Amino acid sequence: MATVLRHTHESAAEAFAELRPGKKPVRSRKLAQKICIAARAAGLRADGRQGLDLLLHTVFRNNSSKLGHLLVKSIKIVEDDATGDAVVFSDVYHVDENALEEVAKLCADHGLGVTGLVIRYPRTEYAEGYVPDASYKMVNEGYPQLYRGCLAGLRFAGSASAIKGQGVAKARTPKRARVA
Image (cartoon, rainbow, N blue to C red; front, side, top):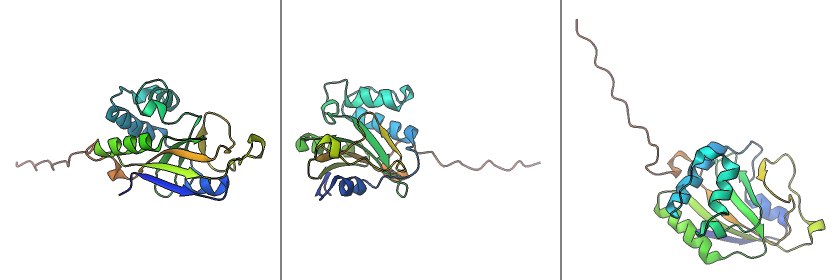
């Protein structure tokens, strides 16, 4: 199985559509849990209680790990309504695909369903950049335009089996009936 998917599209709109953005708000608590596991896999200490915005900066910005240098431009998040997959990505000019592959493999080795994404499209000027429709729910910390030529990031699997061995509830044993 490939740990990094590489695709090329004719426009930024097609590239964004490949992320399968949803119309429902991003479930930040579930995503924070997955980001914390990815951080632990990279040797970082992260606390999901600090909120998604601060967690993103702690994990993807303010450290010297591979995760800290992976998404160099503003971070955006979309979630697929059908599968629950969350995509944490940046619109970048260039991405270190080897580092992206290492991070995806590291996360997979720690039982987290993660796939790296590199989706290329033709560069445009900022003024002609593609602005996603407002009906798509996206966490966005920067410019709304997609214009730099490459969407690079991580797709966190949204299914219950995406986190193997993490938070699995034990089956409850039925209580014995009292004998009078």
